[in-house]
Length: 217
Length: 415
Image (tube, rainbow over all chains, first blue to last red; front, side):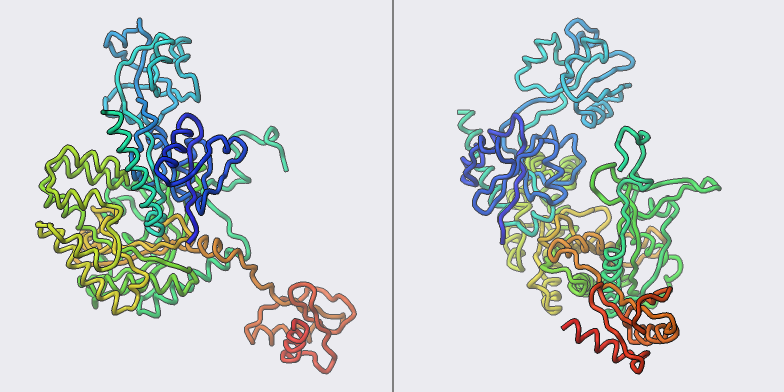
């Protein structure tokens, strides 16, 4: 039986994903090598570095058997994958934030709310549960600029430290969710490659749990 | 090729909608052959071929599968204002036919079908919106022998169609709901866990269980969820410590089913999968999915659906399955590569030999050899037969019309 193909998310989670795989004894990856090559063979397995939003696409369609990706990406994805484990790293929150001096910051919700976000699907789900009259404006980056320019009343965006929000004079109004990195697997691969996929899940969960305990101690 | 700047915005690729496919000569034929192999197998097992419409009233579909799946359908209105939909699967149609036209029996009824189904998938998702399904329904048989027959037939049809290395995962739709019942979870927690399982989100299953006082044996099983797979031995492992009658009954049924599958001689391709996530509102007993390492998607799936027929007024037990022809075809191509279809023979002729050429062509076709005859005279030979381009055969005057000679000459040149 050949090895597995595993999709890794480029960007902020990339080095942590490689480190966790190495620490779990699943792989021996040098993150810097991916600067030159997008696909690296490690033993029988092949690791590919793709855009985070593409990880569920590769996994659902069977291009890769497994993948590591942030929960925030899964919120936005309609791809059907198994979410096998919470890997603990890459912790960040999806929050609704508004300018410090806005009515919203004082707890006054406007009749119609314009929300700028890179997470339109999460935004619709978040506001649908609250029966608010909302216009979602999908942007692809720097959503903090939207309230400053009058494009939107508030933003729904990911924050890890809150620094970017504060630097743009935005305050948190509500939290929509907490995201961490997840191990996902293809439906058929979970059945036909159950032992290999299961072994990775067990190893990564063990290290993630150890780190959680060490962090708490 | 026209550059993007010269194309009107929003133009689809020369008028074909996203998610639909043209199948050209070759792939289209292999897809049809694969369907034929499936149907032949179904008929060989005594299943009668039937046809249902591509369109059903939305009410009919909603009665069958509930409201949740309607958003995935192509829906429209006819001139009377009636809401219609293109079918997203065909079991509901067969159930409607049985309940309204075949309810007098005799039972069990063995029916099979093949046809397009349509799903309104997101644009550019790489998913098919139209796909070809071939399926069987075994109606009026409540016993596990019927479930075993469907599983064995699905495997036999796939193998007859040339799908290699198949693996059948057999589960039970009542095991996990029963487990949640006997775990003593309240209704909210039960729904939360089932919803998380339906989303295939095992992280959420775990956190939903953490906040509950689920009994240990049940919690252990629910958390071990994706690894509850194997042969008959896993049933004993799973049964240990379980008190609830419902999950126990599911395990007993799976044990009996395993023995029946053993009698069908297919247990070398079967895994029991207690963690199988299926539509719990639809399936009522054993369920199964068929996989191959060559595909990231299930190639076929099925199970017992004893509640469906009663929604159409005929309380009949039923079990059945569907094979996804396009996914099977993809899987075969991935393993074996695209095999070029044999080109038909070409019969050409000189100016005075048209009738002789047509006679030869008739003879070849009578033998089942595909050939096409040139429409105009060409070349200096009398009658020539050309196979796949380069190889050709002159036939002497005395051989004209002799099919045996034409075939012999072709074989001689090919070897």
